[in-house]
Image 1 (cartoon, rainbow, N blue to C red):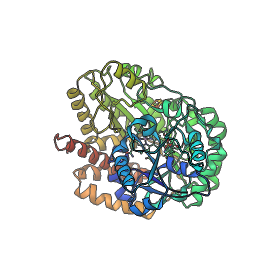
Image 2 (image 1 turned 30 degrees about the vertical axis):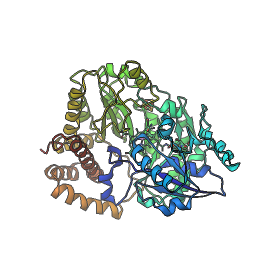
Image 3 (image 1 turned 90 degrees about the vertical axis):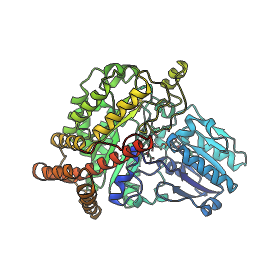
Image 4 (image 1 turned 90 degrees about the horizontal axis):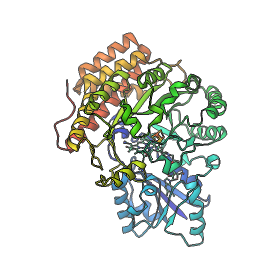
Length: 505
Ligand code: B12
Ligand code: SF4
């Protein structure tokens, strides 16, 4: 059997980093881990190829070669999925689909021949068995959360690694929290399930053997879902492995804010090579946190938690949301103040949207407030329900936040706040490579000469050079991120026909 695995294109979003990737000559930030995992679950005798439309093109020869086309997607990739389906169907081939988009909305794509939903470890073997008997069913689903200790090492050899800025691995699936807007409970369950440290090291070893020596993203819903296991098993093993290999990787991950309560855990993570955590802060408004059931963020000094993580050597990127029923009119300014003072450079502020399968969706539907499907990108000014404060006020407030925090003046002020507070862990491995130097010179041209941020860019470079010289490369990278975020929001604003974009002062 010949299988072509296809990852649809995602638009230029906040997380696509497309404007930043140009500086390092990469095509995409992360590879499709779901598909390379699915590939590793296929029978050995089947041949397979992979096309990620974010780094490559899908041509008719590839489709013609295959017996089946396997697609994976998030909601955001819906438009690209439709194009792929049209192309594949025109060539008379069969499609198998799985991943979050299809698991959440299985009715949205009637042309797809076989939906293999939920985690492939639980459903794919049944499909394969049926297919080998020539009796593939239209839909495979499961209410079980598979034990991932038998999940295989992803098939990295299908990827052209050089086209990506980072590689992904996964240690833990599921999250014990219950935020009402999140669909992780539906996709991966509430009980965190972890791989063994032996498995994780085998995956890292495989990446290392393939020549990867750069960033690795632990794409867990919540990396610290099982803190004791991390402290006693994975992190000591990871520290040892990284020391032996002379720190070939630097890690980033996603974690809940209670990480800041556990100094031992933060210390171990930093020693293991973690340098960044994405944390769902959501809102400085206590009532909004109660409304969405973000219990872990309640009754705590969120600002102090962020600063503490930064001082322990972890850069904090944060998710923020506006549009809760409990949001007061002052929420926009409060979000801006929080973001600016916390020094969260990568601050993804989104409009609340209701994804199918979430408790939020059910409540709003019950209240008759759902007006359509979410487009899957909560930063593109779209919203799929009637907000309490009124769409106009909400969107104006949202626009104020993103134009403010990504305007050069405020972005660079925030970057400086971060650079002042951040404690860079002891230098290990990861020397400056040619592409870093190239990116620096390109940044001088794009940001320092052509960009409207030029004054602020030179100022921060000089400040960092004299005051925090060890942070100079980080300062350059984060400035390039800022350039990307500004460009993305300018694009959205142009699309919605508003003014030209972030203030240029
Ligand atoms: C890493 C990650 C990212 C990364 C990179 C993703 C990538 N490579 O494209 C980044 C940070 C870029 C990202 C961004 C976004 N993400 Co994201 N992300 C994740 C995260 C945490 C892990 C994804 C992953 O690799 N999982 C590990 C693999 C092994 O799991 P998997 O892909 O689900 O695959 C398994 C099954 O689904 C199934 N399967 C998958 N594909 C297929 C295909 C076939 C044929 C079969 C049979 C089975 C199958 O089998 C696999 C093995 O079990 C997930 C949460 C999660 N737990 O999955 C959110 C998640 C996928 N992201 C989500 C969202 C909303 C976004 C954003 C739109 C957020 C935003 N507002 O900007 C952006 C946009 C993406 C973009 N590129 O612009 C949502 C998607 C919701 C949805 N229903 O579509 C998720 C589920 C998080 C959530 N809380 O809801 N994300
Ligand atoms: S903590 Fe994060 S992953 Fe867990 S339920 Fe809340 S939003 Fe979802």
